[in-house]
Length: 210
Image (cartoon, rainbow, N blue to C red; front, side, top):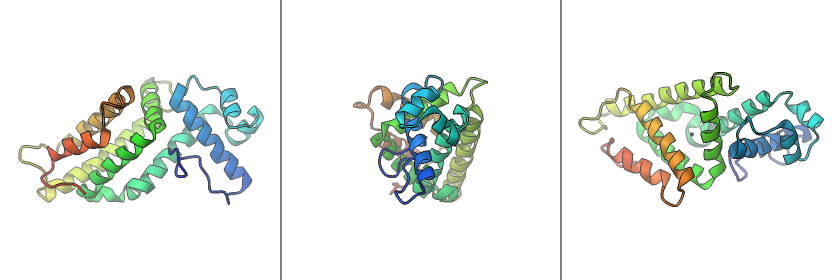
């Protein structure tokens, strides 16, 4: 569910060694390219030109386009985990987890390349031979597991509204969020993602989220 500011994946602190800075710049350029044109349409020559290195220089850091894609996806998840979910620990507090999810959508809405990257690549990755398929399968499994932990916590604390079935709720909410992101990409002026998610969660949870 990258950054266009200093927190964006690929943006390295200035005191990083030169090689690490260059690697981070390449990841940033690839992040933009994959989000704009998709994995299959972004060539290594285009990626090298986008970040101001030769193709040989790009291959020095990332021998294959698959390895570059993996680095982009892993960096994005790592940064989101640290910034919003305490690397998964927050899932044990259902209210904190869903409040963090709203903040994540607000962040994504201010950084459209994040949403574009996910929408384009997750759609492409449904193909059996796509190199990002294992990543997205694992990512959805992890997200369902963490979100279900949050739902289970709300259930134990009797914070779900009467009639809400907690079984399968995580998958339903993920589908809602993914669909919301696609609608926002198509009609950004008509859809406010964090507001829609907060409204949905009010229908499920007894108390107001922070």
